[in-house]
Image (cartoon, rainbow, N blue to C red; front, side):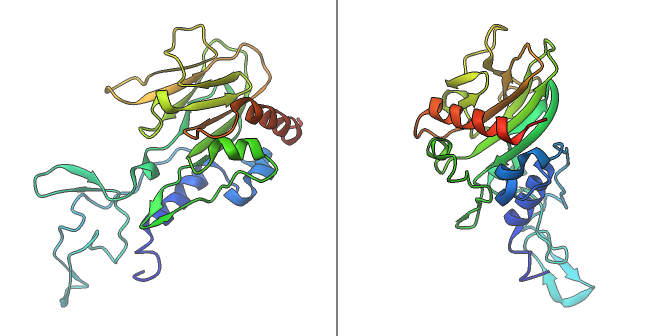
Length: 247
C-alpha cells in the first residue's frame, strides 16, 4: 500500500467517517439529502499505540526493518500514539476524530452531514460545499466546519442532542434551525428550544440540545462560521427543507 493510501491516512479516515454520517457523497448531499439514510455508529480502527516507535522485520527480512508509522504493511492508520514518556497524542488532525454527531434524536433522523474541514498535510479536505443556490448559508458558513441535521420529531419531552466537538465551543457556535437562530447557545434550563449543556461523564465535552413539542420536520445547521445573516440562512434552509423532504 506504500505510495497508494499509506500516505493519505487522514483522507482515508475522513472518507470512512463521512460514509457513516451519510450514504451520499458530499457532492450530492444537498440536492439528494432525502436519501441520506440513517447515521451509523462506528469504532475507530487502531493498530497499536507505538506509532513511529517500532523496530520490526517485514516478512522476517532483516534488510527490511520497519520503524515508522504502525510498522504494519505500510498501513499507517492508527490515530493515537504514545510518546517515550507514555503521554497519548493524536497522529491526525483532531477535527477528524472529534466530530459533530447526533447523540440522540427525538424522533427519526431524515438526513445528516458533517463537513469537518480537517487537514491532510497541507490540504484542507472539503468534500461537501454548500451549493451556490444557498448563498446566505454559504456566506454564514464560509470556510468553517458545519453540520446539518434534519429530523422528524416525535413530540416527546426529550430533546434531540448533538455532540459539540472541542472545536465548537458554545460561545463561538451558531445554530440556525427551524427552532430559531442563536449564537452562543445558552446553558440548558429546560425552557430554551436551543441550548448547550455538559455531556454525561468526564468534564469537558459539551452537547447541543434542540427541544421540540410537535411532530413536524425540523432542521438545524451548526457552525462556527461568522459571515452573513443567520436569519437569511434560516429562510433559505426552511425553503430547502420544504422542497427536499416532501413526505
